[in-house]
Structures are given as structure tokens and as C-alpha cells.
Image 1 (spheres, one colour):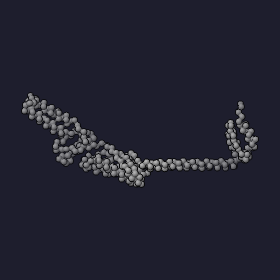
Image 2: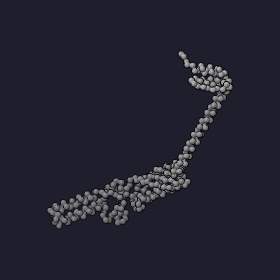
Image 3: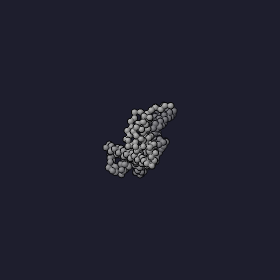
Image 4: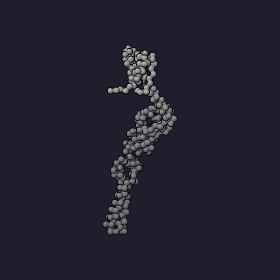
Length: 296
């Protein structure tokens, strides 16, 4: 619906004022018969002109019907019609329009109820078809979008819906555009804003995701243990072929353990003999030597 323009009213005032001026100039007074006739004639002409002149904005197109039949599209700018004979039932907005639509408690292909919100971007390409081919194209687009959304949800698995919103948006755009093309309307894009699932299912999916992360963590830990065991196996083979390296490694381990004060290291005597580190007395002397301060 077009907003009322002040331009026809301005024309009405100017024409009436001009008629009054002519009547006064011709008859010297508006009380005479001639002056009254001129004034009334100017009012009638002003009324006709005000009804005949229309203004359409840059984004508007006026659908003009003459005696009930389609006459033409007018606009943008100033244009004229024949009062009483011509009518303008529709003012079509040709800008890009956004419409929101939703589907509530709709079952997916795997019978999960979901609520889906989406946004539709569309525009009128053919104002004549939009005005004459459908009674109310705004409502028609809204209903077409909702039914298309329900159809797509019913054919889609929940996992596909949560992961592939771009595919759903593209499919919705294709279906809605095919339905609205006979009405002279082009669908620019469809964006799925939100997919809401039941709270119980959300908790179950959260637990599933947490269990999957724990499983991955255990797999990584097990792989790390395997790599450590392989390295220990390589070290054991190296020490088996080189007793001197084993002896030096054992000495280093004991030294690292004994060099800190108040450190007690319990080593079985059999282990000492195996590592060829001498007797208990030798180890004690080594510990005492390690704890002495270094003098320069």
C-alpha cells in the first residue's frame, strides 16, 4: 500500500488559487455570478487533476486497471490516470524483501521432532504477474516456504540437518523458486538460522560426544605407551650389547638421585651386583661424597 503523497494536494490548492485569482481579476469580486462560476469550475478542475496525478517511488510499480482490465504498469516518477475509469489496486515493491518462516515439531526422516527457523530473501521481477496471477503474493510466498521447509525436513536425517545446512538451504531455494516463478517472483537465497532438537536428545548427543572424546584420548594414550615401550626395547637391546653403557647409565641415575640433600635411595644388593657398582659400603661412600659441598 502506497503512502499518501502531498503533491496532488498541492496541485489542488494551486489550481483553486489560480481560479480565484482569475475570477477576481475578471469580475472584480467573487460575489458576482461570473466569479462564482469561475471559482466552482477551478475547484472541479483541481479535484480532477488531483485525482489524475500519481507519484510512484523509485522502487514502486503501479498496476493500472482500466474498467477492470489490465492497462499498464506505471512508475517510477509522476504519471497520470483517468479518474473513475482507471484504478490502481496494487502498488508493487520491487526491492529485496526478507521473510522469516519456521516449522515446529516437524519429524525428520529418522522420526526426531525438530523446530527449524529460516530466512527467505526474495524480490518481485514481474509486477504484472505478482498482481494478477495470485491474490496475495506475500501470504502465498510465506505458505510456500513453510510447506517446502516441512517437505525438506521430512526427507532429511537429523545428522544431515545438523551438519549440512548449506545443502538444506540450497534445496529450499530450489523448491520455493520453482513454486513462486509463475507469480513473477525470484528467490534470491534461503538461510537456515537455527535447528532446535528436544532437550533429552541434546543431553544424549552431548554424552555421546564426551564418550567419543574420551575414547580418542585413550587411543592416543595407548599409542603413546606403545611408542614408549618400543623405545625401552631399543634401549634394552643397546644395553645388552654394551655393558659399559649400562654401567654408566646406572651410575648417572644413582648420582642424580643422591646429589640432592635428604634423599634416600633404596637399591637392592642384587641390583648393585648386576650393575657392577660394588658393595653397599661403596654406595654409601659415593652418597657421602655427592653431598659434600664443592670447594674452589
